[in-house]
Amino acid sequence: MTVRIGILETDQLYADLVEDYQSYGWMFRRFFDALGGQFNYRHYHLLNGEWPERLDECDAWLITGSKSGVYDSEPWIAKLEQWIRHAYEQRQRLLGVCFGHQLLAHSLGGHAGRSHRGWGIGVHTTRIEHRPLWLSDEQQHIRLLYSHQDQVERLPREARRLASSDFCPNAAFFIGDQVLGLQGHPEFTRDYLTRLLPRRVDSIGAEKLERSFNGLGQPTDEERVGRWMIRFLTQPTSS
Image 1 (tube, one colour):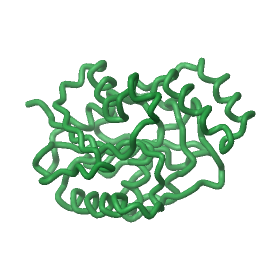
Image 2 (cartoon, helix red, strand yellow):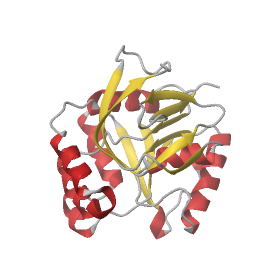
Image 3 (cartoon, helix red, strand yellow):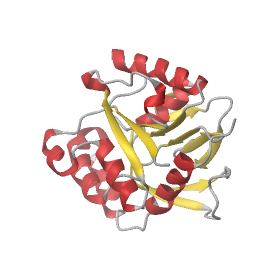
């Protein structure tokens, strides 16, 4: 049976990037399709007021990245927090990346906010801390592209840390076979990141931005992490 993925779009791309990338949700579609993921997709543009009417519209839900923070006072964020808690109580499968990762943790009893460590950008390495059943290989470290100011500072009580680094202690977490959050961006390409980050140079700092660009030649593990995500999304649901 084909798994139906509901993509909760929590941002709109900058206008000059839309023609090439469309949206964060479309980045995930292309990413999963290239890895052989056989999904049906449905997009919900939350900023435009498009929300799921029923939880059975999809088999699993993906919450994208966003320029917003979990602490922002925008009404759609509070509504999404309530939606996440309800979906979790109803045993829905939930996957979040960057902002989605942070809001999953924040909504389910953890805490996310602006990090005192500053921006995490470019290629970052994290070590694998725990291995859920759907993570079947022996990889000890993963490298992904990152772009974030906020972090998950405290995990929900039921969560276990999947990946960690000194800079980002809660870089990925999971709750059983139901919830997965990733701070890194497996769906990003280097081209997208090099077009995105310069517009944030005043906040990031020119020296840090240059260092991150100089490190983009390192190999990354987005394909491996993408296969983990596909296994997570397609595994049988436990009762």
